[in-house]
Length: 232
Image (tube, rainbow, N blue to C red; front, side):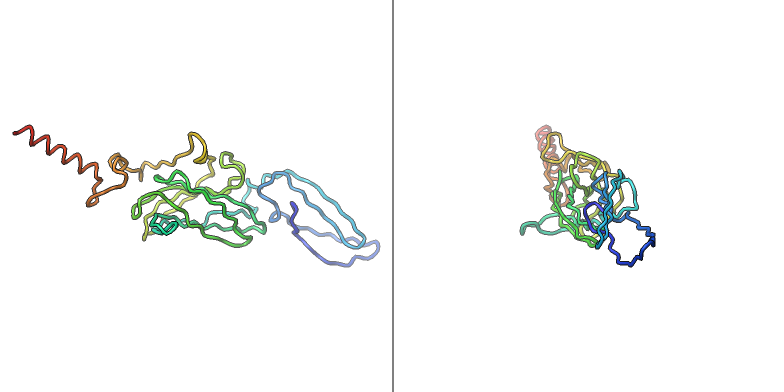
């Protein structure tokens, strides 16, 4: 099936006899392809037969497909430096090894890109660098795909998430939406009205004093000086 050994069986057949076999080839389909070739052959007195069918493998849940199983927001280190991170667990329930790509966007991260390849019938966890402030609630989404991020074909899975280090991370499934990566003009930027930064937080660049953005403290000082000057 699609250049991968799928079924192997030994049997004896006598002169004039027939043997009937039904083999479900669903799990052997390559989800990246639209045209699928099946080859049937025998050993000894060699016989071969092949046929090609057009099947949109990504449009059905019957074909094992790599997916994002879990996302956890945490505090960690990247290259030895403290950083907010997300641990993204990928599962490959297929008999195939797919070269996948992972792109993670958050409010403070325009896009962290990785190219994991989960082994067949196995899982792997990727530590993703986030540029959001450590210790804060972080909202974002993760895309798992093959091929081109700007095209829906090849999209495997997409999840949204929100969480804070040391707390449970909420996660929900989303339909895969193509996006322009960070190296393209007018690239995609994640937005979330519920968890977006305030105007003061953006101006302060995440710098706070006593939990208050420094820009607000500066405005308080400025207003105080103006008030003192007015009443002198």
